[in-house]
Amino acid sequence: MIQRVYEQAIQAPSLSKVVVATDDERIFSHVRTFGAEAIMTSEQHPSGTDRCFEALRKSGGSFDYVINIQGDEPFIDPSQIESLTSLLHDGSVELATLMIPVDNAEILFDMGEVKIVMNDKMEALYFSRMVIPFIKNVERSEWQKHYQYYRHVGMYAYRKDILGAICGLKPSSLEKAESLEQLRWLENGYKIKLGITQHESHCIDTPEDVEKVLKLIENGK
Image 1 (cartoon, rainbow, N blue to C red):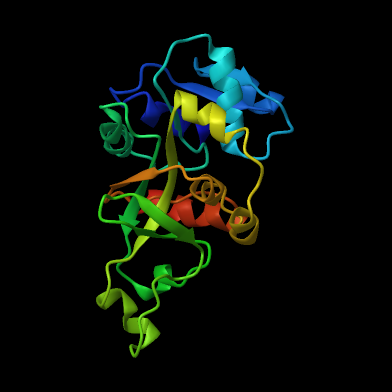
Image 2: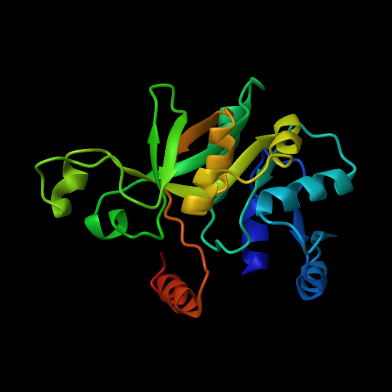
């Protein structure tokens, strides 16, 4: 799975370097067998963002932005990475991430899918596992027909200086409540730019997810 994600990532022309950051010797060794660069990081990191910051410091390169691509998303597409990096060209964007339109109630009410609301500048106002906004006087099964909902695709871009700053922040109350680290950034006044992708994203967190993804691969999706 990690090899598949890596091979997709290196096809994105906007990335000048791709490394696998891990705290597991088995992953580190495996990554090197297929010719990729791997960086060993601490086992104490509370999030992937902190791991990215350590990898940046150890990489020795000079970069403007760091892109955090999850190693458990085998359906990542190079065009998604390009959609994200296209938001960064003028250097003013602090943080950025992607979202995908929600078109059915099952996904909308899945608490594992993080929903996003935004302002008119395509900047995040809030992320939640609950469905927001609430649609008054409409059956829940019809909500997605009355408002364009979006769900989060877990890939982040950090401006280098901002990455260092947010890794120094203490966990916030909203972050603890929803178990979403990006809420810490919003609570501390940072802006998260949003881009839209149409590519489906399927992360693997459980054995059941593995079976689901294998079926999708078999069906050519």
